[in-house]
View 1 (tube, rainbow, N blue to C red):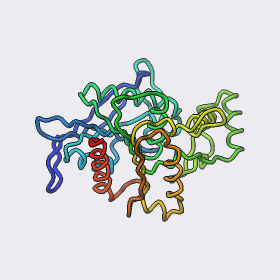
View 2: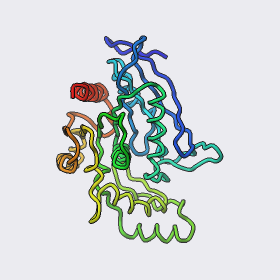
View 3: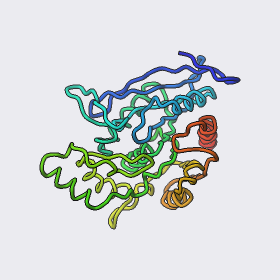
View 4: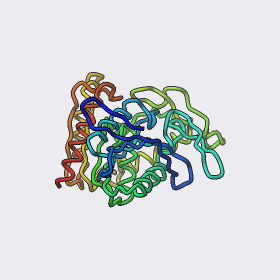
Length: 295
C-alpha cells in the first residue's frame, strides 16, 4: 500500500509480524520511504498503556516520518489494549495492560529488534509513549543494544513512582497466595490519565518493578544506566491537567547521568494522546534523528 500526504513524498506501509523471544506473535505496521533507496534509520514506536500499534495518531506520525526518508515501525507489545489473548507456539497467553508483567517486555523488544535487523536496519531510535517509555528504559538498563542510537520519551510519567493505596497491595498479596493472582482488583486500583485496574499478580510484581526502575538503597535508578542520547517531552495540555511536567522533565534529566545528550521540552497544544499534533511530533522525531546523525 502506498500513502501520500499533501506536498510530501510517498511512503509505503505494510503489516508486519515478529515473535517475542518467549514465543508469542506480535503485530506491527512498518512505514518506509518509497523508492529503491532504503532508509538508513528506523524509528521504533512503543505504544502507551491500553493502546496498540494501529492507533490513528501513531499511523499518521509514521506516515509523516517515513515521507521524509526515515523509516518508522509502530509495534505491539504484550501490553496492548486492556486485555488480549496472545497466540503462542503451544498455548495462548492472557495479556494486555491488565495482565502484563512489565519485566517480560524485554522478550517483546528483543523480538522487534531482531525483526529490525532482518529488515537491514542497523541504526535504531526507540520512541516510547507513556508506559512504552518505561519499557525502553528498563530494557536498555538491562542490556547493551549496539544498534540503538537514541531514545525518545513521549509523555512518559510512568517512570515516576505511581501511587496505589496500601490496602490494595495487601489484598493483592492475599489473592496471589490463595491462587487468584489472575483475578482483577477493584476498578480504580491503577491511577493515571484513565483510571483502570490490574490483576493481583501484576500489582505484587509492581514492587520489583519499582526497585528496578527507581532504585533502592543498593541500586541506582534505571535512567542512570542509559548510555545513549535521550529526548523527552510532555504536551502543554498535560500541564493544564495539573501535572508538574517541568518537574518530571527535570527529574529525568538529573537521573540521566550516563547519557551523552539530554534534551527536554514541553510541546505547545499537545495532549497525551497526541491527537491533532501528529505533524509537530513527526517533526520533533525527525529533528532528533538528524541531530543523532551528526554526532
